[in-house]
Length: 557
Image (cartoon, rainbow, N blue to C red; front, side):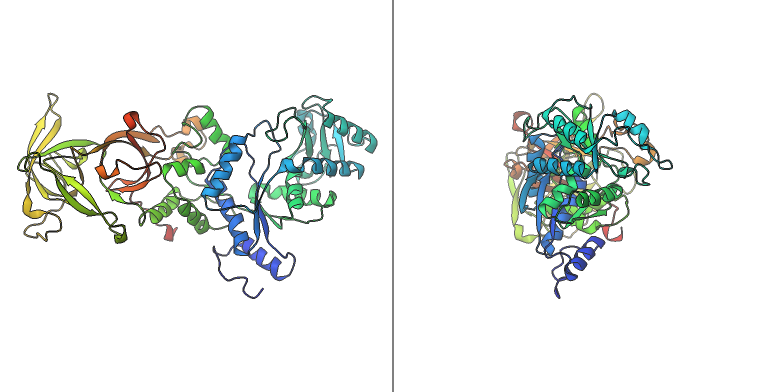
């Protein structure tokens, strides 16, 4: 194992150090991890961290990773979620070595439960859920035994078989592990390991009406598959003794170990499938892939790249203590990934027409501009220029303050990639609003001509009017308002009313054939992605991925 530290794919962390030690000491021969989502919703950015950790850990040490669906709760699960999860994992750039479902092991799990009953380690309990909670005790007081705890092995075997046969209604009985009602760890106070649920399962149909609980099914699934390192988040730390108890008492051949790491928390971001489902069900968002959602499918639709998400997950690392990551950290990696890939172009979001009165009527001139100034290999793009153009309304002021260097009466600015123009006249409507500007241009100032007779301080972008392509642009902000003032309010009251602002503008004509998922940098406005849905009359719809700049510096975070 001399070269075990070579070709590291991510910075060192305590889990990687455990793996290295296990391999060096010979405790395991091959690393085997798994990503085990429950198919009850779409994956979010928090799951991306777990996906990257499990797959990259195995990849680095030439091991294997399974994708396993923890499908033990048929009431909440659906094949729609199964399909979306597989798509998300593949989109992130990973391929599993084997695909499994917890439901593959239902028969073996049942047999292992029977083994526990025969060993006197499990019993059928008739208490209601409320009665069970009342007897469980508190952090400072021990629990009390169920009156059914001392049923005979024969009675328990009979009742458990009848539970499987469907004789009892939902909630009438459960199977509980017999551990210790006085344990300081409440998880070990005779937890439920099977419950009755008469519901159609997305894979097994109506073959079963009893289903194993997570704390029973999960360690058994890991052990059956030979998982060497079961990596999960910190909320399962108190469940580790139960995990070990199940593997030991069920006499599993593989002695899998569980290791916990801090889950990913991001400012102003919902990191709960339950709450994300609420937003979908309540119509707060258009669906799981709404571009404002922190789901992987929502981020993909918005224009986030898999490379950026992977780099982000590697950079934040794997820790033992929970913390909150600034959302701008993720945005930093998006910009870093897109800046060399995204073609540059110009878009006007709030247009005002400019007529260049001394430019020949009916003439269209084609100018050349770099597709991406930071990546010359992407070549050049043609831009039309004529007598009429659109500029941003915010780039003109009738009575500007000092140090305003954009367009105003009597001032000259540079049109990016084109000429200097001088504002001569304003046209107003009856309400006194400026609706059109009349300007003149200086032919000698053409971009690239080397003109330096005079300087201008302002450069603005524009789109030629006759060839401009109408577009709808969605300006996206976080779904949640700042947490400092709203963290105790109900979720619906914490939703940012300005999370999506829709504007209609114009884009360069070279973008008229852009396809869903294509990404661009709009000069001054940010990075944008073509949405999968078209607007009215096939109008292109763009989602803003991120703005161009942020005050956040990931290297100093």
